[in-house]
Amino acid sequence: MIIVTAFLFLALLVGGTGFTYFIILNDLPTIAALKDYRPNITTCVYADNNELIGEFFLEDRKVIPVADVPRVVISAFVAAEDARFFQHAGLDWHSISRAFFKNLAAGKIVQGGSTITQQVAKSFFLSPEKSYLRKIKEAILAYKIDRYLSKEEILNLYLNQIYLGHGAYGIEAASYTYFGKSARYLTLPEAAILAGLPKAPSSYSPYLCPDRAKQRQEYVLTRMAEDGYITEEEKKRALRAPLKLRSIKPKEKIAPYFIENVRRYIQEKYGGDVLYKEGLHVYTTLNINMQKAAKQAVEKGLKELEEREKFARGLVQGALLCMDAKTGAIKAMVGGRDFKKSEFNRATQSRRQPGSAFKPIIYTAAFDKGLTPATTFIDSPIAMLDPSSETGLWQPQNFDGEFWGETTLRTALVNSRNIITIKLLENIGIDYAVSYAKTLGIESPLSKNLSLALGTSEVTLQELVRAYGVLANEGKRVVPYFITKIVDRTGQVFEENQPVSEQVIDSRIAFMSAYVMQDVVESGTGRRVKSIGRPVAAKTGTTDNNTDAWFLGFTPSLVSGVWVGFDRKKSLGEHEAGSTAAAPIWLYFMEKVLQNAPMETFPIPEGVVFIKVDRKTGLPTHSSNPDAVEECFLEGMAP
Image (cartoon, rainbow, N blue to C red):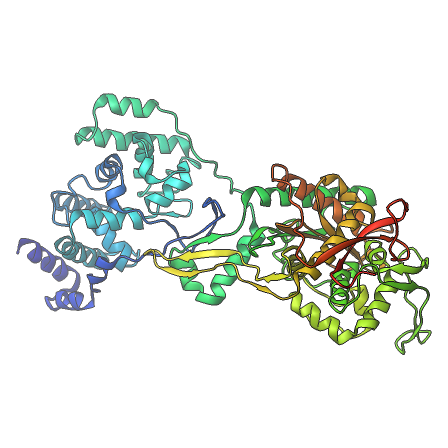
């Protein structure tokens, strides 16, 4: 009754009438929600080894149960902020009266007498304004909170809600911010630093004001010693102990384009409130070592290109995407050189002409229609009506400007012969080829004309990686995915993704293309990566005027693709092609990734036979023929 009478007296002083007290009571919020404490919590993103790689938040807060907080931390905050916390009923009248008379003498509010419970009331329910009316509301709420919650529950709210500087809310986030570890492992000197922050986080920041932070630490330790929480000797040792602060410099994100992909996905599917407030745990497919290798490879390759072509550093862009061929899990993603300058993801969002990198799709479609790597076409000039051309004709050329006459499909693909590919597309039918490309995973619209053979329809790097993955994965198409599981703050699983694959083409056809494409590395346009020293199937791609450079290659387990070019389309240089601009990046990456991996060979499916044929004519020949090559055929289809 004494406390209630005091409230009434203060209310009368402010409003001049007892009715003011009841108005205040009616205006106060309910405190029942405090039992179900659901603050805004940071969403955490993890790599495939559960290492933290990214965070999303409005307030950087990580909740830790008060039961997990070391006693020394609780003692430090209580000693510094509210020495009689465990004795009073939410209000410390001694502190209140002291502050009241000091404020009265000053003619304004210069000192507060707030207990930890009052700080909880203010943080959860009131504005930060300085007024006697707000202090009355705060006092009433503190009294009600103390009767409604246990001291441990109040501490749980306080320690997880309080702002402790540098964007950190609550002791768990602050512990990571300042010391790079959970609050569970805070030492006495560290606890004293954090407990000194609530009064003025910026003024006592160990980063911004180290001397004042040290003085504040000493104050907290002195209060702890006076209240019997620590001995004088422990206080002295704590003051002598050096503080190992985590670097305040923002840590460079290891996979910013990948993490942004995660952010967009969650926001579009679940909304911004869930993403930024609900403290999700997002487990992804990203492999940290592979991601580091990818980033280094792209930067190294682009620097070399700039040095060759005398470009200003940073005008050239690149992208790299690596996918597990068996599962579709994205293991590494580089969407550009500098995420801070451009968030546009060139691995997933950019559509560019693939050039000759599209040709394996045409050849695979042809093999599936009954043609073989030994089938021959005539590499000779062609001219077709084209009203859009100045001459009225379309007269495509080979890259070298030459014509080779009778040529096998193996030779044509390995050496990227344009004319043969155009004739091949005309032979199998454009509609059939477009449909086949969609079967392999190409979702971008494709032009239904013969220039499709030269890769003139724009696609994304991810689409090409997925299509090549069908050839690596014995004819099975996988769904690329980057999130394995999303769990909310209560442990409930929001979603869980498992590999999804479907047999979309005959495994023998997939092997046939992969078998021929290994020769691209052995003797064709992809010879630059031959030094990798293991079975690899690949294809280069270069567009008109050397605008886009591509290299896509795969082992039985991994498929990786690289694109190089300018965002605003212009030539990379007269001699810059897929083999010179993109292939080195692929090689730098895959060399590191496969360094300690076991040697793999492409499994030969049943129903495939091998016969020695002449590389030029495609006809059966003897092993003694210097132009002999062991060609693969479906059973019953050999010449």
